[in-house]
Image (cartoon, rainbow, N blue to C red; front, side):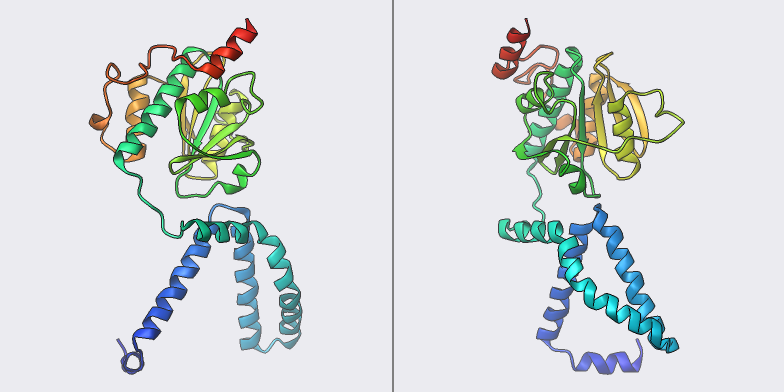
Length: 287
């Protein structure tokens, strides 16, 4: 550490340290809100403009600096309009106290894994087409806004109801964030890959598409074959068995597979068609 830095540290007090930490946390929080959205690219553009302004000052490019200053003055009002959805989300998160993420207890994670496994197995047995996207580090808020916001607890019954053929949301994707179903009926980008995407159906191409541009995991149930596929990193793994599905869900959730209850001990056996009032009513209407 240089002598100048040591001299600077002598003038720092506790309030200065708290001030720096508060600003750092605020910047980190704002960046996390923008991560995975179209606004993140806009933020990069703003950074380039600021860099050009600094460079124009160093090189004494007066005309360029004047033009950037005019752009900056008009841009402040434009940024408020452009970032309005992100600003709204930030205020909502602060109001709910979601500034810091809360770790989900293991027993709740186990319930979520069992609900997903049971729902996917039931839909595979009945050849009900489904597309479920599990958000990871990259935010998927832009795609949640293309569907219907739910913010509901994950349950087998809700997933079965959403993807039933007589419901208006069954053709879209369900997006899961942390321990909640954020939205249903969402529209996802289709894969443009010529290696494996062209011969696939729309659901599988959408699963590939979202995993090509994010670190999300997508689960697909084929309406034609009833097979379950797992998409991650732009690659599709077809025909998962029940054991493979359970193993991957446990690994994704960060819990040991041994912590999951056996299929025989589960309240809703995976091999059976579980009774569900809404679905049963729809199936009777179809008959």
